[in-house]
Amino acid sequence: MKILLQFPEGLKQYALEHAKTLEAEGHNVIISCAPTYGACDIATQEATAAGADKIIHFGHAEFAPKVQKLDYPVEYIEYSIKADLSVLETSLGMLKEFKTIALVTTVQHIQQLTEVKDFYEKQGKTVLVGKPNAFAKYDGQILGCDAGCATSVENNAECILYFGGGRFHPIGALMETKKPFIIVDPFSNKVEDISSMREVYKKKSRGKILSAVEAKRFGIIVSTKNGQMRMQAAAAIENAIKREGLDAYILTTNNIDFDSLNNMLEFDAFINTACPRISEDNERIRKPLLNPNELYEVLKLKKELEK
Ligand code: SF4
Image (cartoon, rainbow, N blue to C red; front, side):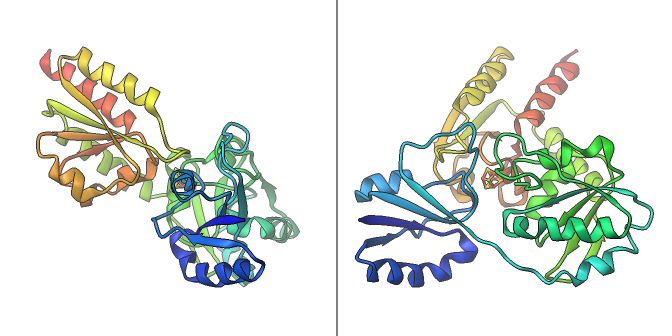
């Protein structure tokens, strides 16, 4: 069988090892070296071009399993980490004032979720594990674009607890929730309350809105990645902009490249309809990079200023 292997950035170092194993089993193996950040980005175009019979996607759980059916055979091999749980003991001090916790994590730690939950329950806490929205696969799992496991139980919890490393996943959930947000990181063995970062992100967002208020021509970015393509939303945004007598174009790309956007000098601002987390990378682009909500705020503000 001809197999296309796809690894996310942090796991690309293991691609060769897996390729050799599959070759020893008699398969013909191709390795994708394109950037991959999530299961929203299955390399179906590459696999078609290479004539592969199947894709093996490493690291992530299936994206949007209930709503998205890919027309390509894909095998998902999730990456689990058995992290040291001693940080849970460390976290008890910061959690002293919270009796009910909404517990979230990434797919890498989903196997440890029950163990983490049991630990806090033994300490007398009530631990809530929520359901994802459309994109994540497991109860308790968050993605940068799916904070459902936090928002679905937030009302009954006193705080949100993210168990895992990195900021990419928790920041998405932080911005979708209002309760105190605690990171319990088993890699750095640190416990941190990041609730105050909400204000920082809100200020950044307000800054982007204000800097786009004079814009006359907008570029609406649409990703061609299977889990990120929002052509209908982009068309609605285009109409909304044009209704205000402004200019708008839909821009397509498989991978958002900030240098290419910086080369599009005739655009005054961009709207990102792809991975929602990309809009936070505003420092790498010279023009404002708005999310759809920020764009509607810009249009509202323009109207108010005209009055
Ligand atoms: S946060 Fe972005 S990269 Fe991650 S799964 Fe969602 S769309 Fe894909």
